[in-house]
Length: 82
Image (cartoon, rainbow, N blue to C red; front, side):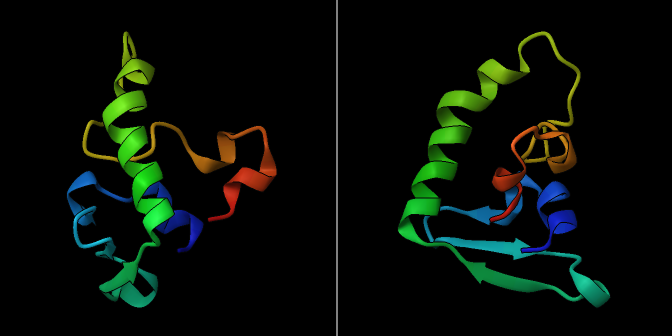
């Protein structure tokens, strides 16, 4: 996935059971489905159900987006690649 696609990804477009991510407005405004490995699906599930809520306590955020910050705000540059 492209960085902009990840930053704009909506929760409703992640299908954990089917292990796919729907990109609704990719390059050229094209819609596509991207498969997830079982490990990525497990990590996203863990993040969403166990960690995301504690990260939002007392903060203003868009509850529909997956990420709570811009990838460009991440200090460890190696973590910006998916």
